[in-house]
Image (cartoon, rainbow, N blue to C red; front, side):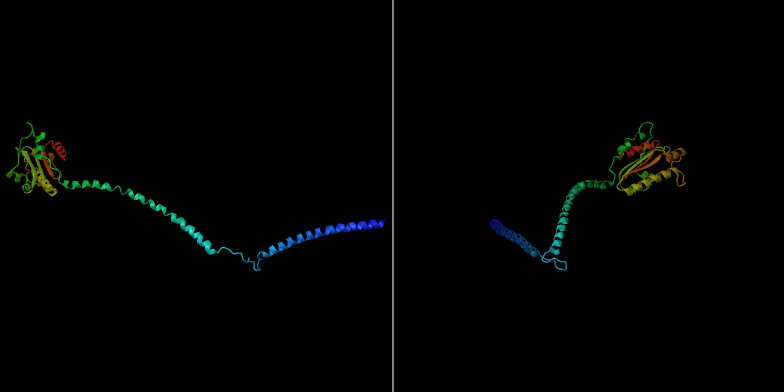
Length: 249
């Protein structure tokens, strides 16, 4: 009986061992295969050479990297040329119409003073009109060269020459318009010589003769030049006459 139990137990163990053996073998096979695949994969990775350099790992050529960086930098300054459009302000040339003010050159012909009516001016002087004014006469003919030596040789546009009829009275008006400034200076010199003669400026006997008359010629004689018009006036109101004459110009 004991022998039968022992056999039965033995058979049961054999069956159980037989049933377990295939599973373990399969598990062992499965566990072995991954190791082999892993080793195979590891064998495919490029090995590092003893010198430390990796094999078969292509690096980008430096020539390509360098060529791309300047290309981008060259494009950036190319856009900076856009400010060249600042040429638009050249439209400021519009002030060119400033040539219009060139018209003031017209007064170049105005070097000769515009003519005024010297006769009308004299006739309007109240200092030589009225009952209390000195009697005046026109200087002409032989008296012209005697009183104003050299004046007859100057071409004149207008001439008004008046002096007192009585030599003891200091009163005279001489108005002359000439064609050029040079002639105007010559007339001024003649009028100044007239004053010098009357007062005896050169040490000779005064042409005015009387001391009071000489004094009036010294103090009340005026010579004025406006352009090509020259005036000599001798009067106690000479300053008023000068103001009226200047107002004509």
